Length: 321
Image 1: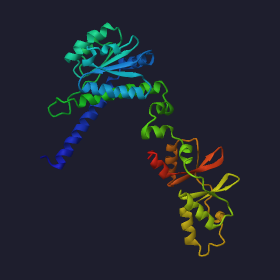
Image 2: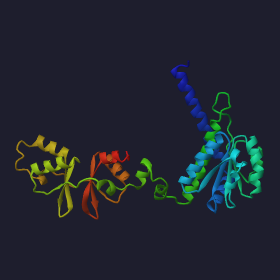
Image 3: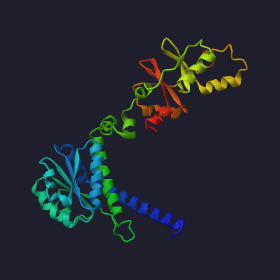
Image 4: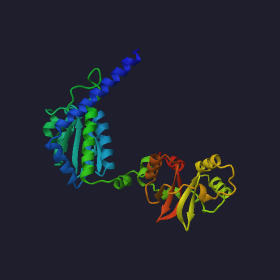
């Protein structure tokens, strides 16, 4: 059994080897890469990615990334293609074949059929002298010096390089299309990521009550209000306009600083110019503002009027944190 230091050393060596392989790709970003970007941007059809083995898994991930960033894509397994899945390919599609060697039997059998379709063929390949490279219209070179596998056999460094090139394609296409966070949200409506992109402050605050007191309300009244709604704070308002906030912390400080609180009013202990946020802003922005100001709640406004409170616990429940 290896020692802890030996295991750490080996892990670092793997990461350094793969990082070096990715950095080496930078020198291979050439006119072919640019032409592939331009072809996809003008494409009337979809991007079809194919591969075998580990390269097939990388192809599926690239498909997922392209689809989520505005480039319609589909995966076609190289082995299944010649058993009926070639029907996936339509006239206006672009085909990207991924292979380390470019000479696997499944790829060599598939390529002639792909050429018959007259679709443009792009090779993401680790051997620019391979059969796949020779048959491709454009080559994206992902050659690596060696695999991270100690036997130089298991696809590790090579698949990392393939994945990195796929990410480079996706990001370049995304920026060229001016694909914004709002566009991104359309394709990610579920889960925490989706909520960060579409859930608004008002959607969350509307689930809460809107505690408020007036400037001349007694300390007893404001304590009752804060306790009743359990948001840790209440707004101090006048004509629906926010003029202050009173939090649990303000009450504690009042008790520390005053022996007699019988004559105190809400206006005497409120914090002026409280942090506010518009109901139409994203809930994720509320979290950022809370963290930035080291606070647990924000007063919500709508068209300048008091609209409620959003608490950090609300964001936790929604999965924003």
